[in-house]
Length: 267
Image 1 (tube, rainbow, N blue to C red):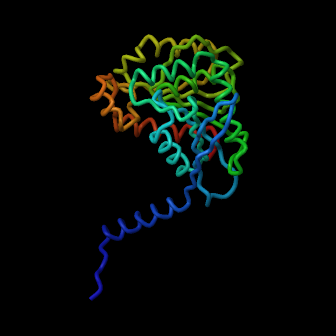
Image 2 (cartoon, helix red, strand yellow):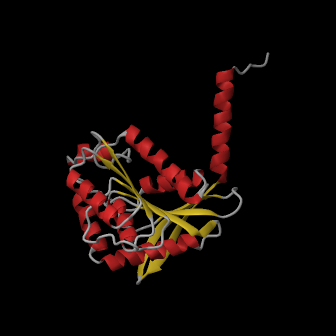
Image 3 (cartoon, one colour):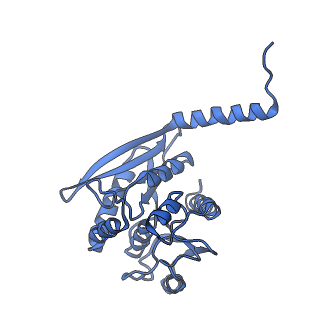
């Protein structure tokens, strides 16, 4: 007697098959590139079965460095129909395991904003030159340190359609200027994040309003820093850091980001 599938097991089987198909179509590639004599290692993800060129999304990692979390985010964007490139802002395989080391790596990378811009532009050009990418449709998103980076790239007038900052620092020595910022800006921040206090939030709103920038800002009440990263709770426990993963805020910010890209690119 053959086993019969009920509607629940059939649905589960259908989802499993869809998942396998999605994995079969997803392509990933580690890309090594050189700038000013230093080697960087990025991560490219795209759907090889999709037809035609599509928008490209740059991702900038947290202060820990280019790790598995940012690569997973790139894969999720690829599954959503974009070509994603998780760039490396530190270079030479630098990956911190302690906050003090992360702080030092971040200071080295940001000691010169022109250096930050050069590293960002190099990764942007690599993404634009990929065969699957529409070079005229590029956005960027960043997490923590990376959130501050993408906001500063917008402030510096880098040609981007949009930028998204997740729990990134909002204050900056740079100031947005009317007519210079071409990107639309979306910011997600935690209302209980001591690293991004309300003064920073208010300051960004004033800055972007004065510069006539298209800004959307969402603050999640009671949510801490690093709310998108499932590993944040472990960091909090190990190092006593005021960070924490929040599933609802992570989901809502991701859904909002995808809607933002749909509005930007019409896809």
